[in-house]
Length: 295
Length: 291
Image (tube, rainbow over all chains, first blue to last red; front, side, top):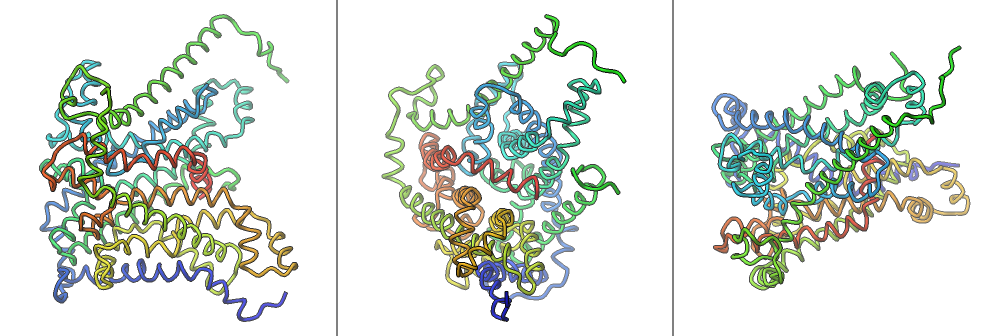
């Protein structure tokens, strides 16, 4: 088939819609935000060049920023392993031959689809001192705290709430479980492996790509926690749930310090990038890809 | 050579009892867990049908007769119809146009080799890691300069070029369709667009449905951008509107009304979910594992 010059370039026409919106709303703003972060732009008037002042201020003169990074790290450290372990066990349970599997799957999955402002308000009510969560704890003899007014318990409350949204992670694990070839288990049985050893030597290694994927997604997601922090606790009490994105939002859109907020955005971007690159770097040591050749 | 001794079918009673117990435990955990995950929704329904005095009655679990007046009240006394309308417009355009354009772009990446196509595809992949939050400040300045603040345009226009994630899903799916089908259609005189519409798209219904379902959820639940760019009470979307009940703009703190609006905003998702459950699950499995 003859290819004319027109045919060679016509592909660009197909991707043009994306390319235009990408340049307009992503690439342009991406570059602009670097420049803005080096100014003191305040939404009105003209920006003044301040060099690296914003970045210096972030790390030396903004305790709220440092606090927001620590809070986000705290959340990530508990939320990510917690949700992965819980989702793993739910997926294992769902993968058994049980009656009514679609019903259980829906029950566990639905909250992650509806997650948003509406369910955040619902959780405010559930987390009241005499609310459902504390009533439940009372059944097992625990005197539940006043979650949302305590600077100690507000963050655990948000983490608890986050476990309600394990659905997506669980579905990824369930799909991975169903993709494990049965003959591996049969081979393990022949070798005399019991339930535990099959889990550890067949299931877990075969699941590592899915575990890796969810770890990457969950960590990226943790750095972007916003809705819950704004709605449920509004960053409080006493900044105990001030997440980095909430700090960015307030700086940029409540105080209109847009130059400074751009600097926060860039630090956020670098953090996400570093975490993701690190994870891909470590992945080679523990993620097993079937079909990949040993090095 | 050693062969396994006894046939596996012979089992002692104790093993059978153990198995039955383990199964019972599985069911207990699954049913107990499902109930725990469903209860918050049940409470949402319950509260939305309660009068204020019923909320504080510890002996009453289910309100009967249900207080429909919460719904009629928010519908008549608050701009809830507007919020629903605005959310609907944004979501409808996002799902229809967004999905369609994503298909066209994905076809370009899957089938047409043009100068720079690989590099541009890599750029597309990397944008999936770049959250909107990083670029939000300049983006809002752009919307301001276009005069789009407090309109629905900022929620509609950026999605008209298709979403990177959706394009990725569709492109991966298109790649699995044998190229011979394209070539056969081309010998029959079909143009590139003709191949897309008559060969590729009819074979890609599952992937398209998945993308449409994801686009629906993404648009309907969107909060960060509407919160920033929308302002007037009759121009906001449902998630932003929900805030008005807590912020005291209407001098009300009534949970029952708020839960009625919460129900209005969650119900469409639940309805779509029950019709498209398979698409959601497949969307994750299609892209998640291999990605």
